[in-house]
Image (tube, rainbow, N blue to C red; front, side, top):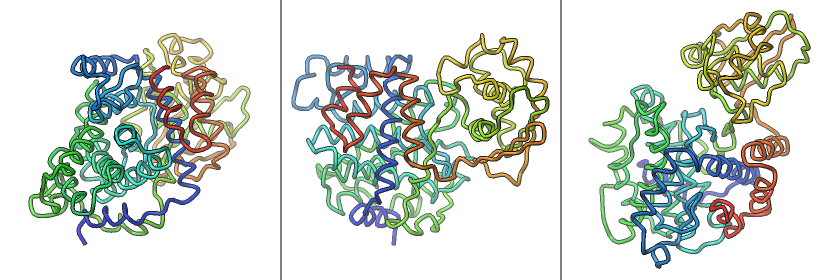
Length: 429
């Protein structure tokens, strides 16, 4: 069975579990909070302004039905997906799935939401299609394997485009042949490189993935054909993009949901520091004298800035993040990581007591800490009680949006997605 056939079969037969439906609602809250908070970022403003300029004079037309975060007027689905994908990834505070190291939500949810508004379905249909796309994105990324990522491809842009396509195809009610054509078409468009990390190009990878999915589905619905074997066939996507073609990725597909273990950023800093922060929260240490932190060695080249001087460097400093966690700083607040924090006397005095070391027996998602002989460990992949996660994500949304706006979002999502109320929140109405 080809990869396209596996994806199509999954889309036709998938039965989301109650748990994965709940995780999706929480991810939707997190995605929308990140998008609204990111709407004022330069990449968001530029993308939004260009799209709205292109749509000038046609904003009220039949072809402009999709909401754009931070804008009162609407846009065609492909344009809205592009802007909303980039906007929701602008702060890099959105969820990550470590099975393939990708940000699935920022690629799939914008595509699903834009098409759902365009075709006029309800929140139930939107949620089901988005979940199918999210799961497909993760599994396709696992199938591609780490070599694809290590070669420089950004999974959010590549695997994300596949998930966006499957979600959009579900909402546009494409048949199996048309969906195969859409997947073949997007194989020529899916892209994104890690060279963009640290620039506005990184969030644009998410926007491109969302838009490419919508575009491929619209073309396929109009009758455009392609090679449905373009994902895994001769000279296909995997062959040309260093894909491992790991068929174990499809084990349990349609029964077990990998998306259940998506990792939400609960701290406004590098994801490599999060397991450490969670472990430190388990120990009550009023005046620690020696703090030992052990993480997977891969993080030592990412977030081990020993003496950060700027707010951006602070986000990539295990030592400073540890000091913040130990002294009660709110690491979920965007404003916590500032130049001022780097010079704070209490934090600076703690830095020399924090020792960072690599331990290759730990998973990339785990950390072990020892404070004056007391140990604790945390793995981001450990299952989190949905009620506890809901509380943490609600606090995060309130922290970055304010309590009133966060409460409106929760109300629009918690009892099944009310698309009208939800998109009003996104548009700021």
